[in-house]
Image (cartoon, rainbow, N blue to C red; front, side, top):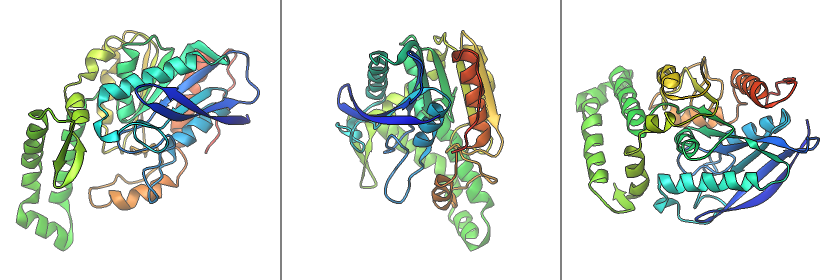
Length: 325
């Protein structure tokens, strides 16, 4: 299915620039998917900087539109073309922005406002969950980040980093163990978190680098499970078995919280960026691995799961054709 893209502006606490992707041959009222990006300075397409462009959200948007859904993705506050200050934007500012994007979609004549689905990736999964607890959504898709708080995700990442140091080979591994680096990871993290939680500043400096303390405090105090228990729309959660940033094992708890229909899948050979990988990254390889993953298409099994779930819930007489991007 062919599609056309439109540059749009979403009015929230800041003017947010986005891309609306519409099927060329669509019905008068079409289901729509709002894509919410992960943490950091990722733009609407998944670009971090000149050296790293994950392309994930553009790939997802084009795929969703190819199977008959309108899609909307946008640059978060202070990122790329959007106005606002990235460093002073908190979790609840991001939820407000996502809510403004839902309102924007509801005002589009082509959109079926009873079939607006939110797709959140990584941090976007937490934002999507918070949004679903406040808005009457048509559905919720959680990629690489469901049923888990930021604090839990960070603790798991630190544990994996510690194991990587313990198991590192060669002189590098010998030196790390000699210096006791693996024993300092948790201690240093707790010191940092204590500093963040005891502060009231929006922005702080850590090792001479400015960090968004407001964003972190709000995330650390947010209990995603409490909001999952308020969700009544259909929910789909998917995480990769090789994801070192989000824990795939917690997905089994999803039906314990969600009131409505809840489905979850762990996709083999998929990492956090939703691409096909045959080996999980380590703290030593991730900087090298990410640019390689960025050039890959979205994992084909993920696309099949999305197409099947979406067509089954939102399309009359569904005919699913999987397009690999």
